[in-house]
Amino acid sequence: MKKFKIAIPSPCTQNWKEMRPGANGRFCLQCEKEVIDFRAYGDQELIAWLGKPHKKICGHFRADQLDVFNREEPVVRNRYMKARLFMISLLAFLTTKDVAAKAWSETDRPTYMSSDRFKKENQSSAEIVCKDTTTIVRGVIIDQQKNPLPGVQIFVKNRKMTFATDSRGCFFLSLPLNGPSHEETLRISYIGFKTIERKIKLGGQATDLVIVLNEDDRVLLGEVVVAYPKRSLFYKITHPFRKCSK
Image 1 (cartoon, rainbow, N blue to C red):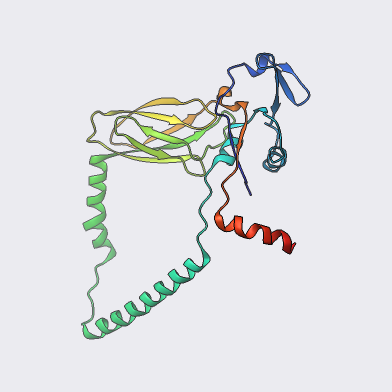
Image 2 (cartoon, rainbow, N blue to C red):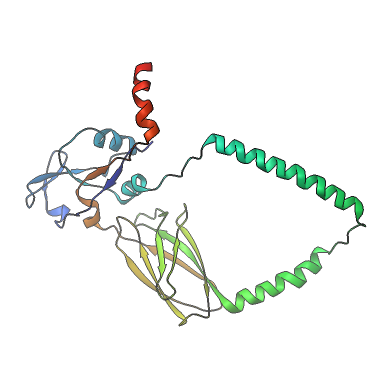
């Protein structure tokens, strides 16, 4: 479980390859400080190393390491709230079931529409509207090692719309054709990688893209700031008693 976030607020401008090799990484002559190479560290190794008290340190990280530690964790809801919601849902279900049963008994046998007729009257018209008014842009965003990148921000500049890739690095954009132009510019940004812009043509057919991002060493190299989350009031009150019970 992550207990802190890693940030490099002031990336180093020096070239990593030009630094002098050291025991734990390299030595920056400009700052006269050792820069620790964390790129081979796993998550647990980083937690163990950065969890200890240290003076100011400089480090070199992989982009995915920063992403893992800075990704927002889902909020865990209170279990009592879940129980309340379940009881409310159950009560609503039983009430609706009784009303529906009564209504069914008081009405004649319902009429059915065949699936072929439903598709003909609904699906075909939807397909025509979608084809005439929108353009589908889909694809995947990967790094230089062909690893998928989740959570990449995709900003459609002319329309002020923002999308993000899923856990597989894939994205799916449905863009209206009634925009200011038939050409759009996608601004693609991701922590630890160079931001790029990609122009696309809008037409009636779907556009498939494979976009490769290059790492930005300036973002991954610099003085490390470890931020710990604030403890809740409940934790502060109960923490001394937890120690006594151990």
